[in-house]
Length: 150
Image: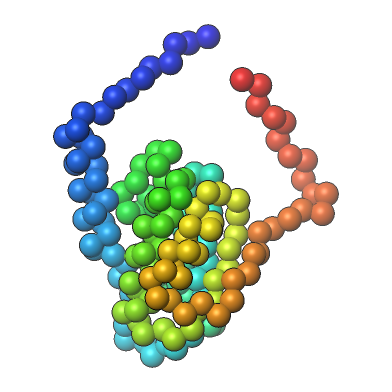
């Protein structure tokens, strides 16, 4: 068995990392404002490693997207609920920029960012008409991977 290496970051490194995330938040998601769209959908794809939000119109054409990795979170921080909250804030800004009146939210996957992304959208003034869980559930399909022995 190998030894575990504990890495401690200095205050300067933590501040630099926080600045990178804040810069990415200020940059935000570039939305195509040339279209006149009133209704849209937000797809929340949450895994253990990352959270991705995609904003589309009713026909499914992508208007903008964002993820925790795109905002500058790296490693295990991408899968946190805080990162998902920040991604939700970026998409909420894009929704306001596009003047969308109604948004349906479709949530897929099992991760810690599921609920916090939806809460972030709601708290930033987005008019959510429905929230639907579209996580794929197998009806005894493929054999799952064997559990890890640590």
